[in-house]
Structures are given as structure tokens and as C-alpha cells.
Image (cartoon, rainbow, N blue to C red; front, side, top):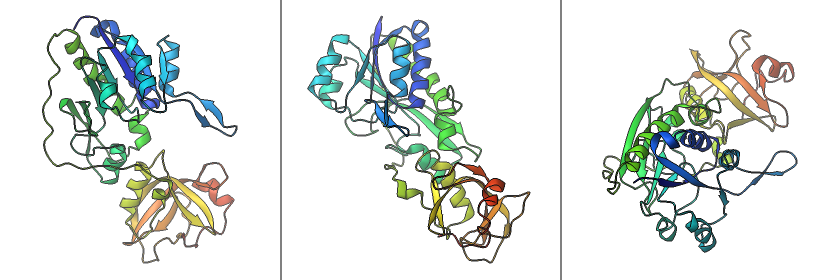
Length: 324
């Protein structure tokens, strides 16, 4: 379709990275982004200032109309319909597209999803992959369907994982590029170029294989169970960075574990015991199977994040304690 018009839908930084790359690719790939659909500004920071989403910020920088709705009801359809968009492109928007809204777009909608669908459908596929110790992460472009992540697959690729990644590094990277956004942009550019030069309907393949689902993460999900192995806890710390973060309790005060690795040693100490300090290693904590977690960065409640040496300077009775 010549002069393909696109409405882009997304909100957080990873989505903004993809959005910015698509803006740069408009002439190359034969499409025009006519609007950005994103979440309304949210309160952030100590002063609870209303801050627009990263996608809204990028759109305004490029003079692209911004549409911010709490719910996609009649008012949103009335606002977006005059754009005459042919296709909806979505990545990490965070809201459900109903049949009336999708009907605004003659070519329907496509969605970028960071998993090898039908594996890890839902809102937290990257944390799920890291929690499970997967060796690869997938990126899929699917047709938007009324049921979550059940649309036909249009393009798909794999990303190898080396076991050091966090959800933050995979999604946001350095703020301008990441493994997920790089792979997603490559798939979307190729696909949108094909769509813009074709008059036929977008056709994908039905999803097949083992289906699994992911759920919203809650703050309490980050609580560490020291009876788990060090490997399980280390994966959880990486999976839950930046949210909800992993924490334990020391003398009734929350301590967030920000960075850690699996230690080489074994111990017979009770799970959760902070072992004798080895200055050149880190803070070693006994885990349930005798394995040891080595913590290198942590943060006590209401204090700033610190490396392990600085932390111990202010918490001298930490060594030898048993974390709750």
C-alpha cells in the first residue's frame, strides 16, 4: 500500500527506542507515522510531578500528534479516526485494543512481543525467560487479536543469552539501543516495507507449539527465599531488575539486593546466613542447597545503593546475621 499511514502505540523507554527508529525509517520503508497513542502522564519522583511517557516525549520532539487516554472508549476513537491511519503498530502499550478500536484500521494492527510465541504470552515475557534460565529470548511480530498474544505470527527471531542479562539491559539497554529493540526494529522495518509495497492483505501463520502465560509482577514477588539455590536467586535478581527488585530483611529493615553472582564455594550454614567477610569477593550468603550467593551491590531501605564494601562500613553487624 502506497503512502501507508501508521498509528504507533507504546509507552515506556523500550517502546520509545523502537518508535524513534521507525520515525527515522519512514522514507526508507515507505510509510508515515501520523500519531502516537500512549498512556497519560503519571506522577513520578519526590515531588509527584506529572511526567509524560517516553513515547510521548519522542513524538513531541518530532511534531507527531500525541493521544493519551486512560481507556480506549468512544472519545479515543473519535480523536484518532480523522488521522486515517491504515495500520496500528504496537509495542509495550499496556492496554487492551477492543474490536471497535481495531476496526479503525483497514489493515488491522501488529504487535511486537519479546518472546517466541506462543511461549510466554502476556505482560512479563522477559522476566519469565530469565527466571527459567533460558538460553535464548525470542522477539515476535504478530497480528493483533482480541485475545492476548494469540494473533498470527508475521515474523520471529531469536536472541542468544549469555546468563548475565537483566530485564533492564535486554529491554532498555543504554537508553538508545538494546538486544530486544534492535531485533524488533529489524523485524518491523522489513515487514512494514513489505506492507507498504503490497496491495494484498497481511497474512501470518497460526501459532503452534507449547503455550505458556506470564502475569503482572507485584512488589512482594521480589522477596527472596533463601531456601532456594544461589542460581535460582541470582536469576531472580536479574529478572526482577528494574522491577520489582529483590529484597530481604536485616533487623527488620528491608535490604534490596541489586547485583549478585553464584559463588564457587559450598557451606553448611543455615540458609540466609551472612558468611564471614572476604573483602576481595563480596558479601557471601548461604542458600538452601549449600550453595553461596555473592552479593556485590545492595541498598538498605531509605539509603542509596552501595557497593558491598561501602555497605558493610555502615552495617558492621551484618556479617553473621541471618536474613529473614
